[in-house]
Image 1 (tube, rainbow, N blue to C red):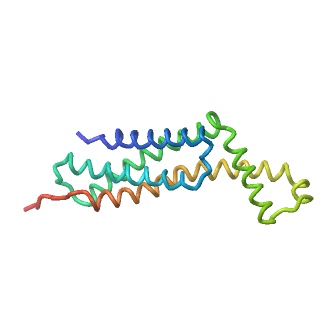
Image 2 (cartoon, helix red, strand yellow):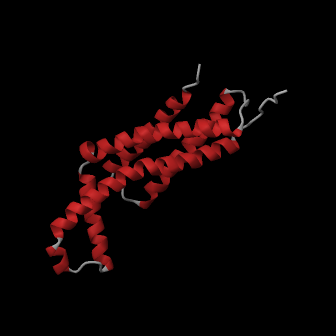
Image 3 (cartoon, rainbow, N blue to C red):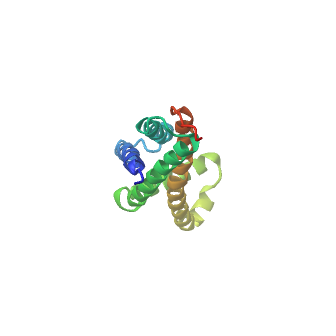
Length: 170
């Protein structure tokens, strides 16, 4: 029977990410730069720890590729669960997130001089509609691709650092 503990570990890491995101949403710190680093650390450490624990559970009788595959399966579970949460967060739980991000983007563009007031007023509705779509799509794509990319890093770290004593075949 195949070991399914990667699902439990992936669900645990995803739950930690979701709780972290909810906390940052309610404390209005979700746009702070440090939250990106904490998110990345949670994914990398969580996936690496899952591969490390799997090695321990298997009496260190695994090779690099098995541990990397296990870590990546854990990362895939995390990415799937977090992607579903991101869809719900954007459309149901925190719909104001898109508006706030759009407002911050417009303010940043004004600071950089990308738009003047006349140009902004003429194209405001078109820019807001297009900007809203771009923000939603990049946020959704970033949630799955970013989590998978960080999961690959965590899988590599876990596979390298986990104790290994694979038995020799005769």
